[in-house]
Amino acid sequence: MAEQQKAHINKGLVIAVLLILLDIIIQLSHQKLQPWVLYANSAILLVGVTVAVQLRINEKEEKVQFSNLFGYGFKVSVVTACVLFLYTIISVYLIFPSYVTDIYNQSISLAQKTPGFNATKIAENKDMAIKVIRISTLSSVVMYNLAVGIVGAALGAIIKMVTGKNG
Image (cartoon, rainbow, N blue to C red):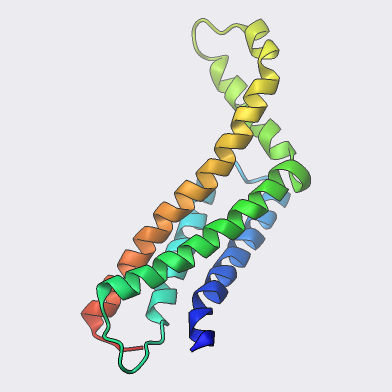
């Protein structure tokens, strides 16, 4: 019983470790700002949570209900999002601080193409922009991963309900 109660933690940790390893590989290969990275991360999380719900072991007296399955998938998503949040704090501030600078530089190059670009104002506000990028990176990690995890939890619960498998 206790092992079953911790199963969502183990599955969430496995998904998070896969995403962290992918992120490290992407960071080291300087591909982090490529559009496909978001799709790859989303696919791993979506499939991971869906599979975690499919692997859910039910107690014999428990009925398979959508709410139970969705709740389980949501718990897996929360564990994954929490671990990724902690990793992102460490990554942005210690391991790969150049990521924030890369985003800033990319934003500047896009801003230079717009009319009314003022290089002196941009230079004056660089520190504030870096802080905003860090905060928005941290918040987006939590919100985006939870959103994708919720979709995976719902998808996994629907698949399990339709197939009628009891674990």
